[in-house]
Length: 149
Image (cartoon, rainbow, N blue to C red; front, side, top):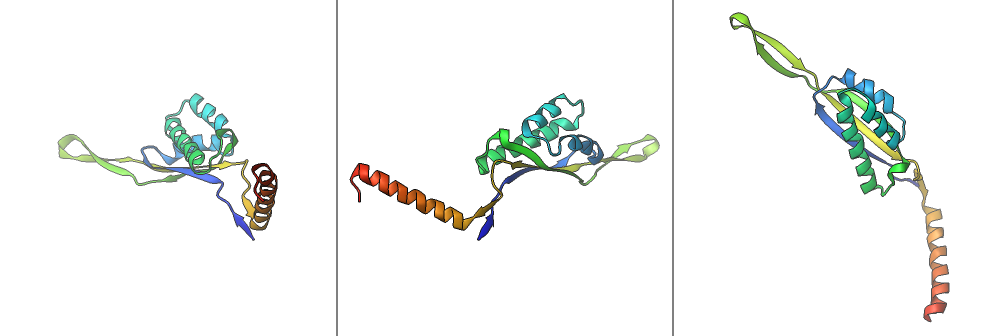
């Protein structure tokens, strides 16, 4: 039986005070690139959105190294998307007791990193065969050395 292994880790930033259009301008530049190249690009781009996206990419890589035990050199940005969030509505006081509405747009950013060194599918039959061969060879070799039969 073939099972699917987990090869992706992600980081999600919600309610970031920024227009989704401005964040997409940066996200389109990093989608599909390697982790190290992405960090270099984000440090050198002159946009305000880069700082928030940089923190999310760094967090996604930390999640991948913790959950998948993967090295940062093997990571690529597999999914990067920006969705519109709720608009924060305020009222600005104006002349003669009136008010003017102010809408601060927010966005939700999702960054997913994938480890390209891991196989996505695992064959349980081959895993069992490899384990049994390993155990038999271990018993035979170490059995002779340590006196086990």
